[in-house]
Image 1 (cartoon, rainbow, N blue to C red):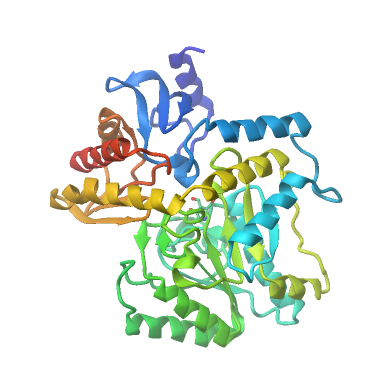
Image 2 (image 1 turned 90 degrees about the vertical axis):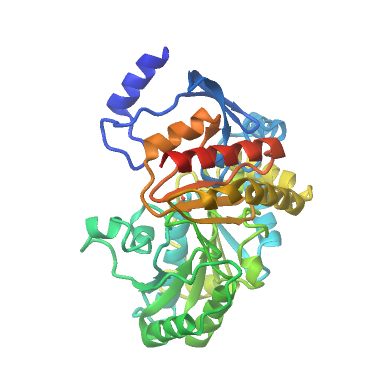
Length: 430
Ligand code: PLP
């Protein structure tokens, strides 16, 4: 299909994320992707290839077309692409579940293989609500989160997304009314703020009788604002939840699998949640799969209920192709010195983005692990910023007041530097 026809059909018929129909902005057409490069059907600002600064939204940690991951899918395709998971099981899914239990904090022992991040959050919240119902405490059904979060686009996850982010206004009366604490004070290295600790403690204590769980993105609040906070607030949450008999859920769909410099963001705090959500990089960005892990306490509680089963079962649960590539992705990640690789990217991002601090209109520059963020003091001109990055040969997807990057872990120094040039170019155009 020629590119013009493709774009006309795209505009007429295809919904894109958070986009109107018919489409308003012309997307770049990607012909293929290899390593850290996206090959376009037609050049943009003279570039037929763009260095990927986004890892396809945190997912493609090994880049594109990795021979081992390709082979894992091909080999599994020769055996079976899918079978139902009700009443049947298979090695790729079992191996993956056992591996996830092995590498996540020790209390997490049971794994539900969901088919997207939002569904894994739905499952996590369902686990928590069902747990308290099974224990004869149905009043414990509200959730507490902090402002500025993002947990997915289906209804229960939307109810714990940032209340100022637009979704809540649109769905007033439809979304369950949850409780919101303020965002934790900014800064990964910031000392714990006693006033904020009191605020959290007060909310949890006052509402303990109706609270099923606290759900947060640990260490990095992603799509809600790319904010970093100290692991001390996670330790505080763990302590408060234990004291007041409230479950703690970590949504590590974005932060999981090394992105922040630890395998899981919870590891920065040295603790375990009761329920953990994983997704995105789980399959190295190859196929859609997510996971919800929980402790025996949660699973045993649910199995003591009137309905002693976790009432959830997606058609594509435990998909063997996705599980096989997830296993290969984990093998690939864990057999290398991945922490050294992340440190290398972190250093490259710190060096390359430092100059952004001197640009007019830049409010903050921050880097943690393989995540680099330039925050402006005004909204980004998305179209101009994307075009400026593309003119520098880089693919970025700025939003709100943020120009940010989370490149694949295989990105070499020269390409990390190029991505930083793209971020700077985008910041100057905004
Ligand atoms: N939770 C977090 C922290 C996320 O960053 C996302 C996606 O960006 C989700 C949940 C939803 O995942 P998915 O888009 O796979 O449904």
